[in-house]
Length: 243
Length: 243
DNA sequence: AGGTGAGTTCGGCATGCACCGAACTCACGA
DNA sequence: TCGTGAGTTCGGTGCATGCCGAACTCACCT
Image (cartoon, rainbow over all chains, first blue to last red; front, side, top):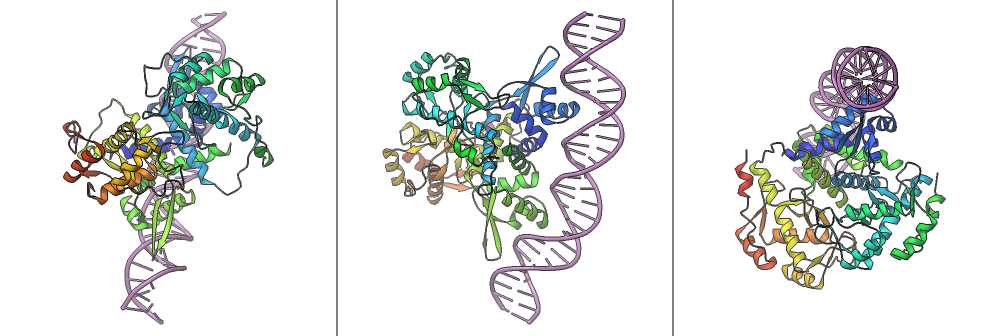
């Protein structure tokens, strides 16, 4: 079977620390240059170059050239989805053994970007709320926005005009590794994140994937999506066990 | 971040030909002994033993002892889902390059088992039909069976009594690597496959994951699920290019 | 035209690990 | 109690590949 060989190839690519670090860095959704990725993965530029070209050839990532830089990014939501699903299995690996929870992990658990949309308790809460008020239904192809949802989201400032172009990846559920629940990915998910950032409801924590809820965001999410009692930014439980 | 290290570990485990072959063999849903897996992966028993114990330790597979045999199986649907999602990305890898399609691949494309449920054109067709007649809705936690669906499925001979025990994995969508559409996994998916086999509507092709539609099955699927014109067992297109 | 900084290619090194054969344990049955 | 067959442990071999420094290309700027 030809597919089996490719499966091994893809898994082997992800199964290297340097490459996996680069992929994780790119999961934030932003494009990064080769030198930046080399630094993040703690390898020399030649080594990084080698890794990156292999991943480009395997179509895990793609590259665009601007000036004399090369910007790399995750090539497809499917790749992001695959990485999330591997992470999900990896989380199963050490179930009862002591799991150190750093403050950073706690922040990630509260809210983070997943490729280009929101995940964590925050992402799941928004998804729950939109589903509960029939703004979004998950259907056969992954999901769709109802008329009521379109009204709400457009008022919120989300651009739904791409809606009909590619229904497939328009709004798809994405399994959350920390919450083990679905959150909203695809175009709609990306737009919701973009707008939350634009309104300054959420801010990135340094250069990590973690996001932080601002005071304006607390009020905004409550008024727009009916989200209340999201807990503090950081779940006390997470800190109690923290390292 | 602790999760990143585990991600690498899991991917590296899958990224070895022998181990991936074993995992693929176990994707059929059946349990296999160490010697059988060693033979399938074309390695010696010591080597297989090493691989298997590593995968057990990583909780990708689990093992039960019966007599002096050890039976291995995929430890969780999440692992099966992960493998499918890696395969999906692997399928993206060589998009326009010439893809040889053997008769065997064609058979797999028509219908196959995916862990413990049906996939391929057949699996997708059944899912489509059940969703179209409102027998199944995909909801927040992945999916649920409606009252109409419960009636139809129970008449068909599916046991839904496990239904409330664990709603989570009761009925979940699973992305199909060849059709790139959802089919039905979870308990409901497993039961549908079991019943189709029991009624002799489907038979396994040799010891592969491919399944074949019998004459009784053609009539049965048409009458029960309104499935017609599933195409021949094998799509002529697949054979035309075949090797 | 020469300088600079990003990225690649090349050669060589080192280590990890997949693999096997031989010897071992262990469970079961005669 | 001994034989048999499944599975494991151990020691040793060899290949694959991750890694780097040095030298190179290439784009852009002065």
